[in-house]
View 1 (tube, rainbow, N blue to C red):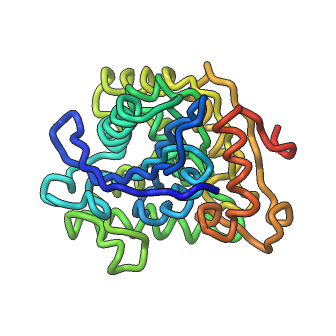
View 2 (view 1 turned 180 degrees about the vertical axis):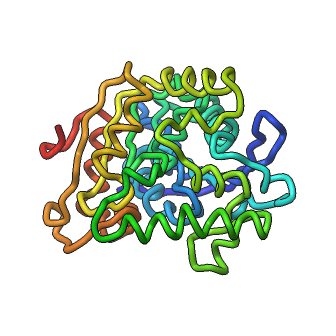
Length: 300
């Protein structure tokens, strides 16, 4: 691996909200064919700092990588009085769009994306996503409760995310996730969109025109996609992956249901694959897909 550097950036979304981002770059001389610029879209309630080691890994292999916090989370939390009104769709259509646009105009090589959980799905709402060449979605879905893994946790997950979360959010005006030990604090609109997530994601829009716009955006996301989810992922089940993938029918997809034993561990779960312990096993597989579109042998 080459040496890397990281630089903070402040990026302005189309509506004027300023987002915190960080650019990870290789320090060696540029390759004849740049590896590309990878935007990493985080999971709901997860700060960009969780993906730092993975971004450094990408930069160490010749990519430029960009991490960012959605409005209302982490270093993009303030002004929270404004951010707390954000909806899930805003995170894709406004926040991810701003980061993708900056990466496309400022960094060399093809535009590439890696998205975790909602980030693997919601990044498709960005207009700039139409410029993406290849995408990796890790557990990408929009949290419709009927898609959760039935055993052992669907009832428990429903009780937390779809019963308790909206009650607390409506009472407090936002989700105090850190105080509850439920990931990061979330804006009111985002927490309620998650809690009320339906079979059809576009039903979250308040008008027919809004629903049509969400469908148009998702259908325009035609990047070749490696769809990844561990078999012990309570959120990223086959049903959830099918539901998310159906919004972008024009793209080539390869699906990899990762078994823990493939990676030499007893369990992975929904949040595991970006942990540094998977640097020798899972992370190199994403390099091959991002650089050349080559899927792991176990994928289908």
